[in-house]
Length: 346
Ligand code: ATP
Ligand code: MG
Image (cartoon, rainbow, N blue to C red; front, side, top):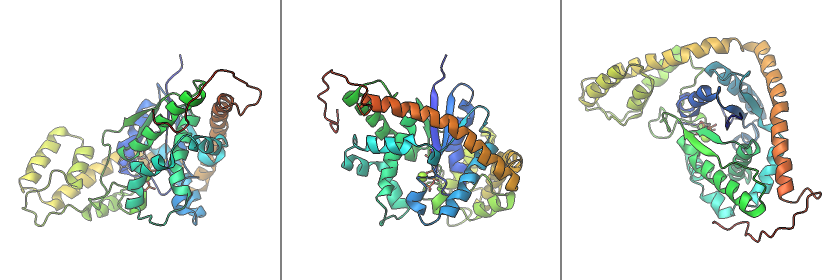
């Protein structure tokens, strides 16, 4: 029996953080056994915001893989995909771009939120193209399921549209229409208390942060509270973290009640939540240690190379099927009528 396929990934624009954990990584670790998993490191897409920092992208590519291994992604069961090694992806990106109205791409809420959050008034042509590239990443692996955070849901919706449109226009039954799978916290707030936690916004607690660093960041967390006896806001980032990371549900209820009634101050709650976060990431530190230093890096490079061979073969097969359906493979001629507009919306 074939297992349903998963593709999801991360941009090496920094190390992975708590938002990745609750938004996507936990689902990945959980689904590794009964799904065929592909986890992609989007090192090409990292150039959309860091074109002038290739060394940082290289470093963070390796750090993201360290984070994967630390969190429990198992390279014996799941395939790591280094985007730059998969030749079929840029080719598919170009072909799929023809099935997406320009205005549709620019209207994508994922893209619009990123342009606003990252203050990218000046962005390259490649920046909006990366959302089309993300459709190509997913479809190259003919994924059935895409575990992501809420911020990416609109892009997955665009990917579903492209998959359907490809079938309508060219046929060939190449792509499943992929489903979104949101995490147990679909959008974790950042320590600024405003934006989503994000690698690029300086508001993240990283999975690789030490205990002291976690406490320091938690002390700086913005809650908007004026004094320790004011009623606390149950919707603040601090309370969201308490619900997400304090293990005992009875304690979460106590903390919520006390905080809302103004009986628990920010400082005490922050310290307790910082301890809870530290307890969640502590086991990761031990697993990460196995991949520390130059020897760890060498092992990671080898792993990436080996996995890229398998991933490349899967994506090549997709591309062959795409080219056949599009009659780009000139050996295939089909006579059936398919008078469909490539940009029609239904
Ligand atoms: P960048 O700031 O460079 O965009 P990022 O922190 O948004 O980085 P991505 O690599 O863009 O991270 O996202 C990787 C995955 O993690 C996506 O599935 C995304 O939806 C999810 N994710 C990112 N941030 C959060 C968050 N704060 N809460 C829940 N899920 C998140
Ligand atoms: Mg992002």
